[in-house]
Length: 469
Ligand code: AMP
Image (cartoon, rainbow, N blue to C red; front, side, top):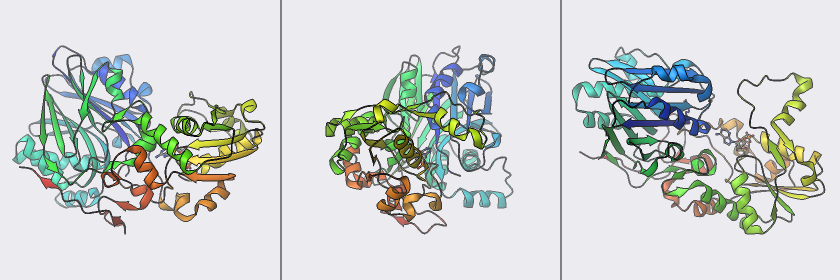
């Protein structure tokens, strides 16, 4: 199961403080990372209470619900709509009770050896409540904790699990933030008025009027307890492998990730696109919202005027009633409408971040042509997506990825563009400003930082993880 998610953990030093509202706001800020389910777990000094539900943060929680989650330490999670099992059992934080207490776990990432670990545990008689790999981690962690102290238990769990994980755990009155040795998924540390927090993106800190301190290092665990934060470097690799798709699409432009403002990265990518794929056009326009910052970069570098040509309706919720055939056209226009006078008679550069199946680009090229565009040059802020992600982005299967079986001219024909240009691998790496060997570009190259069990994939360079005693 591929889980792209948002996680947060906050510990306030004041034991009378109520953390659930802060977690709620942080989850609101992280909502773009997952809309399928949301949950919060809070420790009140004695026990952990959780509330989880399907839907958006605003649908899952109300004032009364938050009032029941009393305590000064807690964690939260939003889960992405995935192709895998969509059910309440797989929503998080997952809570497990064990002999000496309880632990709640919120996970962003994907374990590549969770099936074999689950089979081993089941063979030994363990029973499972969900199909998520998070539950596998909880089992392993608790078993380790029965025999070792906290630090050794986490190290033991990290030795067993492979893949991407940015984990936030609530263990008694402690919040733990753990990032996998390759640092594939993001996780950062911040300071709030009377405590510390960890979250997937720095915007969670901004929302709480807090301050980003730094990213959790690959292989590091931070423990926040009673207003103090302690760091343990548990594992070390020869360099990280940050997920490239966070920079291209997933993270919000106002987030600072591994030292870089995502907005700046995307403006750079747009500029690179303008250099690599100039176009004879009079207007640069984004596919909203994902193409906006890239289009700004293209406009700045090319000098071609920037003008919005498409308007997205931001109020289409998950409860949107799917129309019957006769209303399908109306439904499409309800989600996205053209600004006809900005389009009619113009030659457009239409910018988006990525083409996955090709449906969005094709539909929008048709829309702007129907609105009178003379030419439509499509420019994409990622190289072709040629392979699935096994490490935490819910992308699509190989069969669904249009660029996995079509050349650039082939894709250009399918989406009905006058020209199509993708940013190059080198251009992308330069725009991000992180050495190529420190990025995971599996979806763009089919070469992954780890061997993927059961898949015939290439591995970039075997990085040895050293566990530090
Ligand atoms: P498609 O229509 O299948 O080609 O998907 C491309 C569109 O989906 C682009 O507009 C992207 O902004 C967006 N997109 C890219 N990756 C993802 C993802 N992992 N989940 C949801 N949307 C995505």
